[in-house]
Length: 215
Ligand SMILES: C[S@@+](CC[C@H](N)C(=O)[O-])C[C@H]1O[C@@H](n2cnc3c(N)ncnc32)[C@H](O)[C@@H]1O
Image (cartoon, protein in one colour):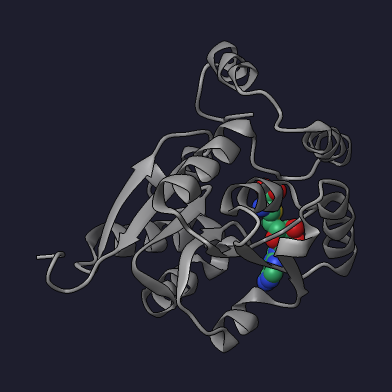
């Protein structure tokens, strides 16, 4: 549910998008029951569109939780694509594997357990798309790291870029300050073309440019 939109409009937008399969509805129910901060169908469909329109085949996700956004990404990459998803909580990582197995998608996903802020330093690119939805305090470093990890033309997609509207206000806690730093860095960096879409809690989409096209 969006913190930013009129609830009637928000529900309408969600109703317009059917669940791709029964397992998606099961994850949504589990997310509601356990109060988990999952993306919703609007963001899921946006991820699907970005993956399919760019032809992304090698995708990195930060923050798996129980595998809901992972399922949207894994479905969109197709059977030859691969998703590497990082999750610090072993129980959530295992639950994600169970859901992805049930959805018939586990063969194209690796859920890697550990602290994404350390794991990201060990990864080798290039990735075609990175979905960033883990610890908000890591957002600035994740953005910097994506400068090297993304291929030219690749996308960084960061969820919660508006953070319930706090990003637009002065001050804020450590999470808010980190999100603001990440937003400003990406929106102003010459090597990225970025826009912040006011979808749900804000989704920042940034394309990694090469030096020539960015000027
Ligand atoms: C917002 S939830 C992800 C929701 C998921 N992307 C979805 O929409 O289906 C954030 C997840 O990041 C995980 N997380 C938090 N800090 C992390 C870290 N340092 N490294 C890896 N995962 C982390 C949390 O355990 C949580 O499951």
